[in-house]
Amino acid sequence: MKKIGIIAGGVLLLIIVGIFVLQENTKQPEKQMKVGFVMNGSKDDASWGQSHYEGMEKAAQNLKLNVIYRENVTEDEACISVMEELIEQGCEVIICNSYGFGKYELEVAEEHPYIYFYHATGVEEAKNMSTYFGRIYQMRYLCGIVAGLQTKTNEIGYVAAYPISEVNRGINAFALGVRSVNPDAKVYVEWSNSWIDDDSSREAANSLISKHNIDVMTVHSDSLAVYDVADENGIWIIGYNIDNSEKYPDTFLTAAVWNWDKFYEPRLKECQLGKFQSMHYWEDIRTGVVSLAPFTANVKPEIGNFVHARMEALKNGTFDVFWGPIKDNQGNLRITEGESMSDDVMLNEFDWYVEGVVADDKE
Image (cartoon, rainbow, N blue to C red; front, side):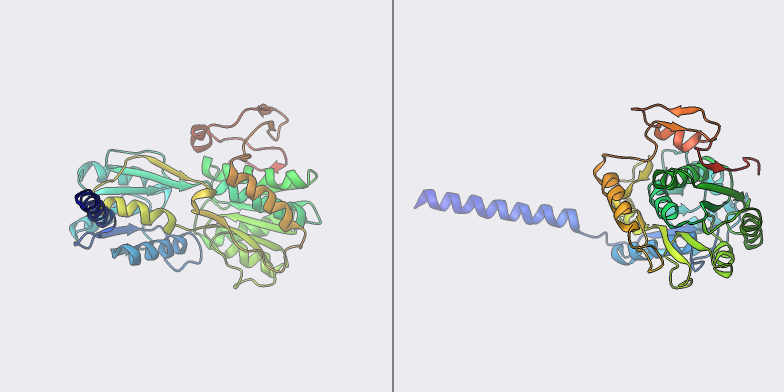
C-alpha cells in the first residue's frame, strides 16, 4: 500500500508540474502591447496595404494588441517623425511595410534600442530590428504556369514597379513558370516606376497592349489600374497581394497572395514574451505566408493538374524555382544543372532576366 501511495503521489506531482508548464507557455501578458504600423498606402487598397492590414488585424485580435495605423506615409525623411510620434504614444513595436522606409527605420531603431522594429521587404537588420518577406516568387512561378497554359497568343504582359532584385525575381519566376509549360511564349515587361501610382500603371498596361498581342497580363505593383485596363480590354488578369476575383469576375484567373497573420502573430507573440529575434525572415509556401488564390471559372480546367503537381513539389522540397540549368535572355548559362541560386544573390543581386523575358532594364 505504501508503494502504491508513492506512485500515486508521483503521478499527481507530474500532473501539477505539467499544468504549470502549460500555463507558463500559453498565458497572455497582462499588459496590452501597442504596435505602430507605418504604411506606404492605405489599409483598404485591395492590394499590398490591405493584405498587411487584414493580417495584422487577425494577429491583433488573437493576441489582444492595440495597433495604431499610419496610412499613406511617404518613403522619405518625413516617415521618421511618424515613427517617433508612434513611440511617444507608447508603441513598443514599430512595423514599416515598404522597402523605401528601410534606412529611416534603421535610424530610428538606433535611437530607440528598447523598441522592436520590423521592416517588410528590407535587407538590413539591427540588434532590435528584423526584416521580413515571403518567397512570393514561388507563387509567381505557379501563376506563370497558369498564364503559359491560358494564353493563345503566346504574348503575356507584366507591369512592374522598379527593376530591383525583388521585382526582377518575380518576373523571372513567372517567366520560368510560363516557359515550363509553353516554351514558345514570351513575357513583355513595362515599368510603372511607382508602387502605387494609378496613372503610370495604367500607362504601362496600355503600352503593353499597343505594342503586343497581349491576352494575359499580370502585375507587380499595388495599383489596381492594371486590372482595370486588362478588364476593359477583355484580357485575362493574374493578380497580386489579395484575391480580387469578385471585382473582376469576367477576366480574373488567380493571384499570388499574402497571409500576413501567419507571420505577425508568432513574431508579435515573441515580442510580448521578450523573445524578439534579430534576423531576416523569408517565409516559403510551407509557412502559409504565401499562397495562391483559388482558381476562378475562367481558368481552363486542365490547368489545375499542372499547378497542383508543382505546388506539391514546392511543399515537399523536391523542387524550387531557381534550380539550374537556367539561361538568361541573352542565351548565357547563368545557373548550371545541379546548382541553385543562393538566397543572398536572389535578395540583393538579381539584375538579369531569364529566357523569354523582354524587358528594358532602365527605369
